[in-house]
Image (cartoon, rainbow, N blue to C red):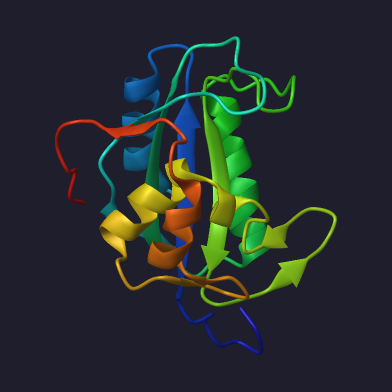
Length: 172
């Protein structure tokens, strides 16, 4: 709240992923819980996608999705809520790109561009990852990633990354 006025709602996109502890269940539960964050409402959610690991490949495939939320939280407060949600699911940070119970990434917050030690917006690698772009384009076909361009166009450069849409679209 600034000068007694409530903060205007922002549109944010969140990437979700898991490959341990029943990954599809973990992602579905986290999708349901996004709307429980203060001042946050889940607007839409993508289908679930099975994704081959990138980087550290000796691990199970991931289940990924993207959610669109409306929030009155600042980007930093939303990120803090996402990190808290990860911890409640048992996330322990270890090896980069390694196995995890739940990973929640703040991908975009309106069209804000931000670079701080805690948070970079838009997410610095989202434009390189089919497991982000496919579900993003599913729920926001005209989405434009600030300083990168239309998500649909960026998806073409991610061919062959081993991403498969699972059955069913999950409307919020």
